[in-house]
Image (cartoon, rainbow, N blue to C red; front, top):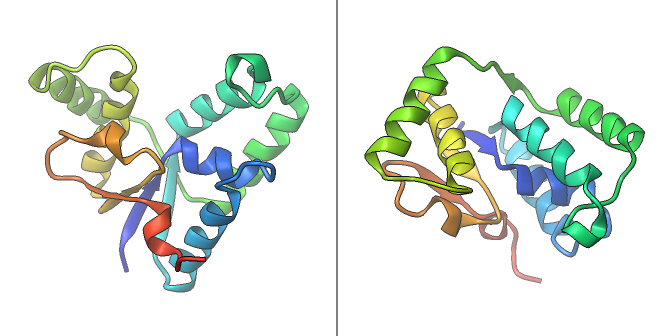
Length: 150
């Protein structure tokens, strides 16, 4: 049994039935659950999810109401085990951004890597594998690799 951390982009595609990658997200998670792997979320996922879900469509968001977003967040939290935030994650994040000279939007990716490392999680499940290139010793898994070709 392996342990995975879900990237926020996976949760967004899973929740948005209109997203072209929705079926891949759903099938990849179904396979992991069927094989008895664990898939976790963390506070950062929920924060990022809320930001994208409530942002207007014209600004690359989903344009959802706060109520619809709240209901979807509730559903996500019921389906996935939640990893607690702690000072250890912050210290690992700081070490990663300093050691790898990370700046800008990649600081959020570094924080997910810090969550992986401090919680002993094996894999990161993401549609954006390139965002995590260059981080040492993490296993990045694309949902596409878990779904048979159509």
